[in-house]
Image (cartoon, rainbow, N blue to C red; front, top):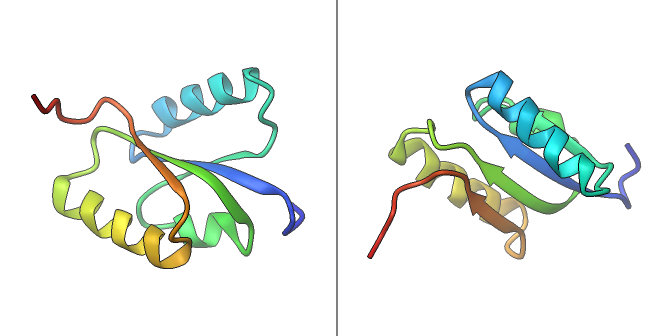
Amino acid sequence: MATSERLIVVIDPVDGRARNLKELIEFMDAPAVCVANPENWRSRIGDSRLAAVFLGEDIPRNERDRLITDLGDYDPNVSIVLVGGEQHA
């Protein structure tokens, strides 16, 4: 993948659910989408620029918080979407 292409990343420990979301995003004409898990996301994105990151609901809160911090360090302007996360009033 070219480094100038902006990448959407789906990070979810449940591979099947991550692939389903990837297919939905691609259906909306976003061709640069990859699937990763919380342990391998950095190697999966390489040196690509991030467009957005979708974090799956089964990521434990402490790991999700660490991921958000790490993603912010990688790209402070990246949009992060929590998929099926906790509801707050």
